[in-house]
Length: 212
Image 1 (cartoon, rainbow, N blue to C red):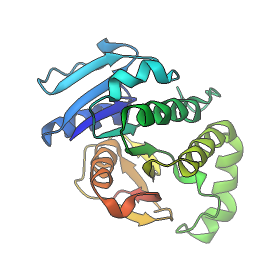
Image 2 (image 1 turned 45 degrees about the vertical axis):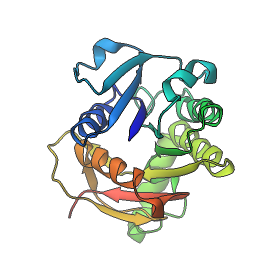
Image 3 (image 1 turned 60 degrees about the horizontal axis):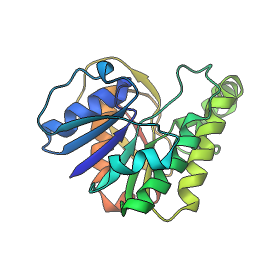
């Protein structure tokens, strides 16, 4: 597949790019600073573009099979609506270039019902997290709403707390429910590539977490 990755220089994005290349995909990595993606590969094209401008994004998507957004705020105190604003531009550019498939990274606390979580967590930890980081999760909530209202073949992944540990090579997943636990970034990258090629995940939010 020919993939366009937005957020390629982030912690998850770098793993995603490497794994996609190792799997034989061609990757266009959309970045602000190419120096932050020190990967040299014949199937990798690193492009500087404005993620909030659909016109700027069209060349990064033209001729590609799918888009992946692993964008996120610069820390949990960042109140910039980066995910919701960027997904609007990405979807507009996708429509203009005929790209129909997109996978976007969200987060567990966006699922308001807390389905799949222990009841004690739903009643105590979840409300606290949503209150402290309300701007971050409000942005992700808007992003998911924009995807759901559109016509693209979207899949949303909602991971838990992410760690910098090495890959385990395994993960758990649930459709329209959260999966308790934590997850390594390499395992999340693998999950993204898996759902990207799984038509059963289209127009669904998938909860993921590492092995027990």
